[in-house]
Image (cartoon, rainbow, N blue to C red; front, side):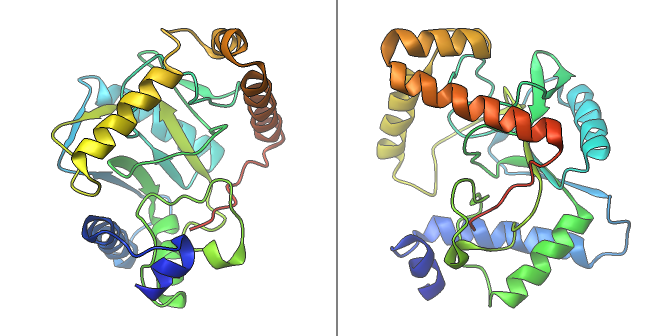
Length: 242
């Protein structure tokens, strides 16, 4: 509890700690098993509803992970899910197509969600060692650390290469058990209203943003170009903030 408060300035909700502990347990168990460091663990929460083509897409995602040496790939995110028109969720312009209108790559923004992801055994072992070194779990499960590298927020994902598939490979059934369902629904509706570009890729997204708010569009473009440049240089290792 004290560690969580130190990270976030507040105490966790019961669902937040339960979720984080569940994922830590699954990851640690896979880490303890014998096997190659490149073996993969597919984690799916019980409310995930994958797309019918998930097996086909996963085969291509795994090839991308192997070629790029990624540690973890988030396969779907809250709110965005399988939506194809959320302009705020940008990927590097040199991300890889993985079929059925989806791409796998490094994000130009924050990644959220632990509802569906792939993680290597090597990454699981580093995660488990970090949990021990940090004295236990004191973070939300999906705190991949985008945007904050302060020492007080470093954690088990430190230095891992985190990628994401967008649009995602699953939607979600039922209400959240971590946050207030009514409040979360309002938050989700607000985000969709703010960021739905009615379809289109990165260029259309930027044009749509310019028509509403030029400063936001400029920031979006800078972030997108930066992650693309770093991606091209092979330097997009996430400096995580867990």
